[in-house]
Length: 452
Image (cartoon, rainbow, N blue to C red; front, top):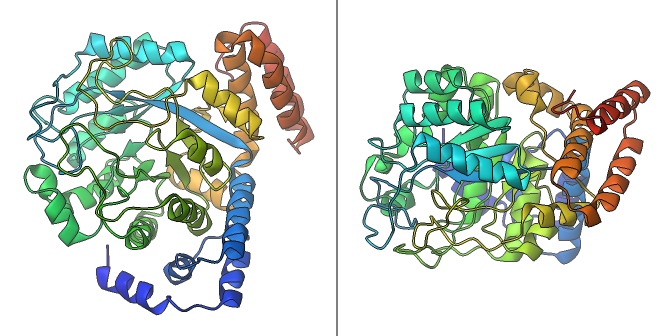
């Protein structure tokens, strides 16, 4: 699945690529059909500022061709920080005696979800610690059921330890959105060093989790490396190998790729990245991922600072978290010394919405695809043909309108209405535009959760 020798050979052979060839690859990428590993490896060696600008413009173009101008918003909900693993880079590691440990019960999870909902969010990422005695499959499925039953949260994605096929089937039955799991590093030797004890030390069990999820019927998957543990160029090619493997075997690539960079954490044994990724290289790799796998969503968390996050909106990122807390119970009652890592962007959801609007994009709280069965292979086909934005734009309009009415600050509503007006004008299909306008009127009259 991950061929390290091939990756190393590609990185070595692509060091001295000429400007014209790099330009040709960027032009090819603008067809929105993706790139080969070899082509991607060549782009990773771009250093010329002029070529970087061409790369960035291509990434912006491809993102807007595939998804329109929408940016999806979500918030993480941590159910536990208890863990049996000893990952050197993580504040939750078992050896960290400074951390205040807590696992939320069902009522506490619902309370957290309601606090997130009060911000205006409609989708959450449920993040569970990796202590199977505490965050076993029943803990997860009970939490999912309770949140869906008691909150107006319309989509719950789950980041949890690798499961068996039978456990994944239970997760599917409970109504999971995307199952997310990071390999952390795809480099085996580095992986071994970073995960000395615990079930997570088993590289292959973690790597094959996505296959078990697909076999169990979960067809929306999120993958990614933790950037900074090993050479970012290797990690980019490895995550693309992983994507290619899943696509070839199951006909479904990853729904999302996340790009977290290593951040300091209380009690972490690794406060400084062994392979630091500069802001310049970070922007480059995000843009390259957008060119290489145009159909895949790219997720950016509050690990990154506000200014950089704002810049990355136009370089390929399609989903961002906002108003995030990385500790169990952090939304209702934030407790010191309980976070997984230190966040950098502390803006509220409303502040992030304003930033997205000011950047020329439209905030989206859409969860329609998961209820219209536009998942897995069906989603991939629409995205690959550049048709998914047909739904993304009007659904973004509808969900943003709802957010403005229910949660928006009065001073921001006029600007928000201008964004909606402009987004409507960009809908090319006359019938769809008319239908969207009709649904907007229904939302103004009090109806909610309307979508295409």
